Length: 210
Length: 220
View (spheres, rainbow over the protein chains, first blue to last red):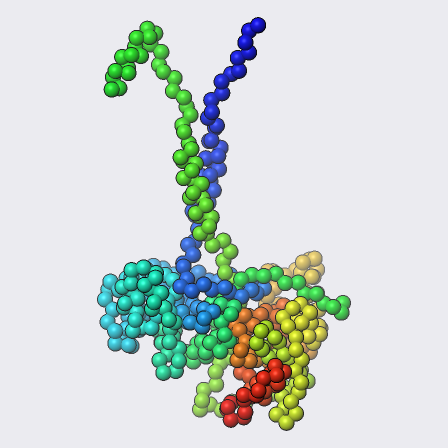
């Protein structure tokens, strides 16, 4: 009897389709990726039925964290040539008699997440090397009537970029009095139209008496 | 080294070019791709955050005297947001002499939404009917003008309530978003966010069963 010889199969699997698919997926994700800037405090935005997407550029964001700290963020304008961030910081520096070097201005421009730092600490905040060190200065922007820095940020942001829209990104558990204070500051600076950042949620209206 | 190997091969006699397998070991590439894909999937912010636009009336300057607009008490509905997601409401006007008892409700579908819906049913039905007509094709309208058409329906309405939204000091930001949301769900045409007055402060505190903290002098 002749021995049945099993054809020895090579252990290689053809991975070409797999690689094809992976490259496609990878290209897709790389192209659609918009990096989430890391927030200094976790913000859990409330749910709403609003479906308007948030604008990409010309926005200043007031971030209210659950522990009632206020952060501020402003984008660099629709075009990178505009350099709104360093311009605003320069104006702020003039107002509070702090001279920012060009290096610090550049650093501030690149630092894209929101900040909650007293302007007097901003120099050391920008010099800080790692997030842990930075977190020490993030005590929230002062908003009381004696030292209302948020109002100044809003004022200069609007002077440098008149098209800027106000966005309020609050944590669900931020206390209303803080929100009210921020709204008052905005209204004092003649900003009467603003947007609240929310997460989409579907709601059905059930009418009991139909 | 390479040369030695070549010489050995030549010993075979026939000059057969060695068949190289066309297979390339793709495992490392696949590994790397897997990692990259996972990374991008996790860092991508897929759903863009949504925004809800609100417009507040312009602030009255200190030296400016403006008569507050007169509104009918019968159409007024006051909503006060309290602590722990509680919602209080009362119709009409607050009176310091006789405190109106507050109705307590919540943010569930049968809570404040039902209260608002009861008062706004006519307008709500009208908007719903209009949207239904657009979907079924009875009314031919462009998507862009749909919103302005609904806004027109709202401004023309004169039966719905005028809702005054007030916040007790212990309410949360979530409540603000929730209540504005309810307004848009039910299609309330007229609502405004105003400051709470001391009478209402007391009404909430009485409903909560805590000592009253406000008096006419505390608020201007």
